[in-house]
Amino acid sequence: AWRAEDLAGERPHVLLGHSMGGHLALRAVVEGAVDPDALILVAPMLGLRLPTGALLGAGIIAVMNALGRAERGIWEAREGPGHHTRQRNL
Image 1 (cartoon, rainbow, N blue to C red):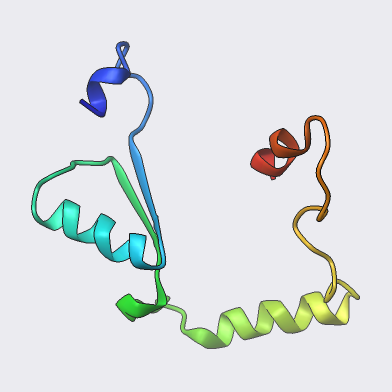
Image 2: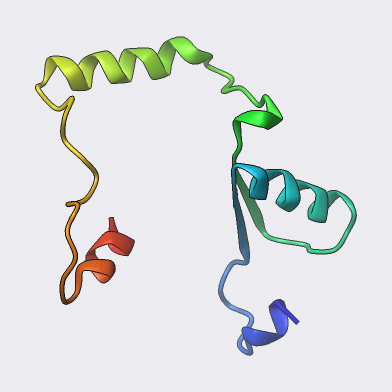
């Protein structure tokens, strides 16, 4: 049903799971319930690690702090017309 909604079949089918949803997304793929083109898991409970290790992430954070970006959010914490569209685009 998920792929059937894309009548042209041209868009990639990406499954994103966050936190416990990451576990559920992975389980759905392993059990064959879904067959996405890509799987994005943001779930610390899975214990997945970057091939480069945590050191690279720490280095990126250090550079952002050095550039004065430590308090910069990804989006503004306010609501208004078009706010959700801008937030989604970010």
